[in-house]
Image 1: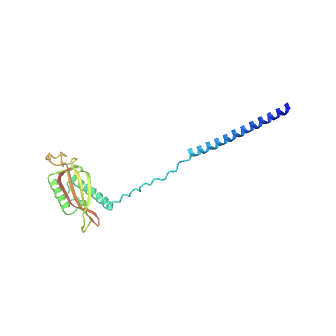
Image 2: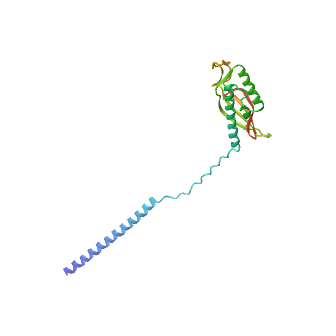
Image 3: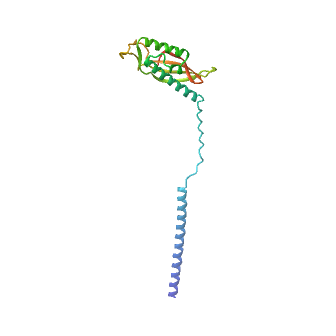
Amino acid sequence: MTIARQHHAANRRLLTTAAAVATVAALTAGCTSGSKNDKNAATSPSVSPSATMPAASPVPADPEAADKAEVQAAYTRYWDVLTAAYAKSDPDDPNLAKVATGNALVQTQQDLANFRKRGRVFSGQPQHSNSGITFKAETKLKTAVITDCLDVSQWKPVEKDSGKEVQLPSTRLLRYVNTVTAEKWPNGWMVLEDKQEGKAC
């Protein structure tokens, strides 16, 4: 009778232990599964609706950009030729007729002839800034107007023989608005008029 009780008690302890182990295993599995799900939830990137960005408006190209570049190059060439001619006070410089015509050419040749008669030439060179180019409408040939600030402070008349600087009135403008009108000819842009506006800049 005692042995039967001992077997019965042992069996009951085994069943209780097995049930406890099964419960722990189930709980552990549940926690592990939940942990994995939580980890995936934490690491999975949240999907948000893509924000709609307005498309950038394209900047329209300047339809006159090519013509302006040509005019600017011709204007630079014009002043290079003038500077070289005034450095010698040579009204017969053949390059003058390649960049200027009409009033601009006549005026320049007259000025150079007067400086040569007085024995004067120019030293240094003029500087330009704030150049602007516009085009006239409804003209037979394409016509451009170049306006800029001309600085002649480093472009000075000197005596040809001595190199001594010629003294000019202290009130004269050293930086002034200059307007040049040019026309597009078959061989390129030609300056028609070169006008000092008499306004400081």
